[in-house]
Amino acid sequence: MPIELTNFTVWGRQWFEDGWEGLRRFCAEAGLDGVELLASGATPETAPPLDLVRGVHLRSIGSWLPLAGLDVADFVDGDGRYAACTTYERLVETRAEELRQVATLTPDYAVWHGAYAPVHVGGDGYLSLSAGQFLEHLARLVRDVCSLYRPPYRLLFENAYGLGIGPAALDETAAFLAHLSDLPVGLVLDIGHHLNTRRDLDTPRAACAELKRVAQTWHQRRLKANALHLHWTPPQVVPPQSPEQAMRDFAARKDAAQRADIVSVYFERSDRHFPLDHPDLAEAVESLAPDYVVHEMGALSLDDHRAWLARQTAAMRGVTEPSRRGRV
Image 1 (cartoon, rainbow, N blue to C red):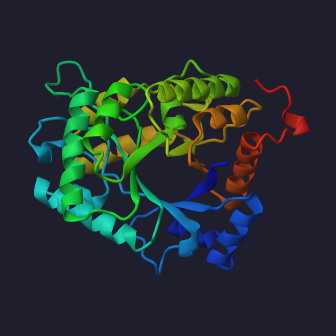
Image 2: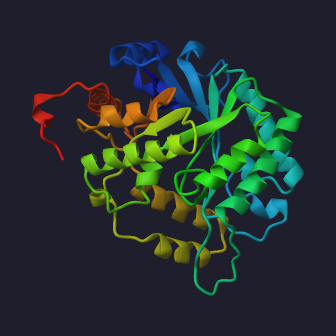
């Protein structure tokens, strides 16, 4: 059985009247082994009890390719500390500093988004890279960072919006891991991010079938999903704004803050992190056989987080609720 976690932030402490003891109780009631923490500068003094912190999600680097000498725009906004980097060397130092800080939380692993989102707007003059080309540059960045600080935990690279790690580039993903085989690296499959690229899969049953199909293709390529980020965004709840329109709006603005707002709003609307609950989910997760399952909920309140988590964990553990039988 996989180790089950849920996503959490240091700000979530305010949800509990008794602070982190409330989180410990919450995890115990849900049958969870702990959390994957959105680090954001957390220290042992500000983080949840360290025995609960099994994973850490690193900050977003954002559009770093120009610092590597490439005139390539990335439709992703980075954390402030990375946006302030003006040279590739400073970028490497900043990431190494973050990995060193994360080590004080003693996690089993840390998650690094292994993708970039090319800005495709007709006639705009932007260059773009293939998944393989991007991953070659990412491998160089990872190696440069680890030359300054080699983490004692595993770095897991996650598929995200755009090109890079993930089900759409299995050959390139395998080559990336092979290039870094002497380092503690692995993979996260974020099935919600993948399903966001398949809006035709508009039922929980279809989403579970796709997870099982992806698992089969990964096994065929001998790729191991060390962790699974489990959630989905039903296509029916996504506003009709297309990625192309969002990118046109992005490209039309030169102010960094305005661009960041466009990116933030787009992802808030299109990547909602709802629970995936269907009787087929247990078999689908079992077919992937991850070491960790992170129930990655986008709830904005403790009550919603608890309710969404209960739905998804029940489905994944094969507990059938009478009111949900026959769901498609």
